[in-house]
Image 1: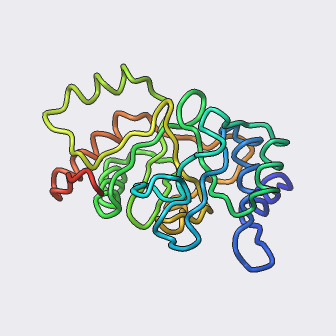
Image 2 (image 1 turned 45 degrees about the vertical axis):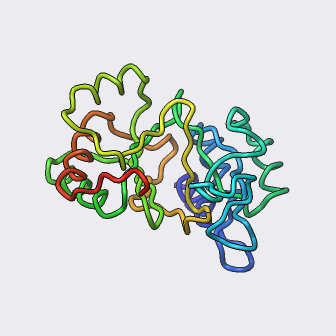
Length: 221
C-alpha cells in the first residue's frame, strides 16, 4: 500500500503555486513504468498558442521535442531529474513505440464517441490522454507493417486519425502546452507495474467508425 500511495503522491504532487509537479510525474513514467520521456519545447511566452521552436507555423506548440531531440528520450531517473530540475515547467513528452505504448489519436468529440462504442462492446481500455482538441488512446506497441496491413483492409481511413508509433511522440499529463492542459481522460490505475493497454486493432476499428459517422475527417484537426 505504501508503494501505491507513494505513486499517487508523486503523480499528484503540487508546486507552491498549486500547479502539478512535473518532475514527479516524469519520474513515475520513466523509472516505474519504463516509459522513455524527455522535456518538450516550451510554448512561446509571448503567445500561449505559439511554440518556442523556430517554426512559426508549428502545429503542436509546446507539445513536441526540440532540444534535446527525440532520440534522447530515456528511462534514467538521473537524467530526468537533471532535465526537470533545470526546466521545471517543460512538458513531458513520451517517445512512443519500442517497449513504450503507442497511441491512436483523434479529435475530442468523435474520440468520446469512440470510447462509448468501445465501452458498449465490452472492450477493456487503458489510459486515455486528452488535450482540448484531441484525445489519444494508448495501445500496445505495433510495427509499421502491422499498421499498414490494418489500414489497407479499411475502405476509408479519415485524415483526422493520427498514429503515434515507433519514432513518434505524445505529450503526457500534467503538461501545459500551447494546445492547453494535457490531462487524463481515463487515468492509469495505481499499481507497481506499467499500465495495461489494449491492442491497436479494436481501437482503430472503433475510431474509424466514430469518425466516419460524424464526418470528422479533416486532417487539420
